[in-house]
Image (cartoon, rainbow, N blue to C red; front, top):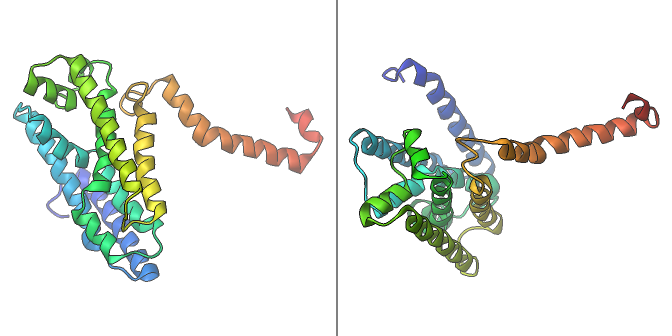
Length: 241
């Protein structure tokens, strides 16, 4: 840590401790040492971020395939799924651990959906450029093919459909993964479609996005509190409201 900038030291230490806590709990409760898998997941993510930074500062537009090959990792979906596997799986198999490292199939497809739905969420390429995000699937496809933004969006939407078909096909195929982890992977793709279907609700949240978050996370808690109060205070609750 001594060679890191001051602003990164606390963040790195928090990440380091969190990952080691997860590895400790997994070894203690499930008998598997997973430090190398978690370390590789974060290293791959950082390398993907670094590649995007190189493209940005060198003003290089990669080919569409180069962008996708890097972008499915930089979406952060792979890091999330690898951690999720160890959290939701009771009986961790050696075969599944190997697949987490080398089998890009079932991890790859939801992450590509995650990446492409994000890139499609901007109303226009100009909106991305104004935020300084000059490299995405749309710009790379347009630069490589010379085709219009509308055609690029159609091509990317078709790619998302193909990824869904590949995931559905794998649901019917033998897999080293348990059903609960497969569901997590499917849900990553679903939440990506939900998050970005009305624009970029992450980088530029609007009232619709905020209301959705409230309805899913906060309103049920408030409703439960009101119900608990009604149960506790009986008819007197009506007088309060």
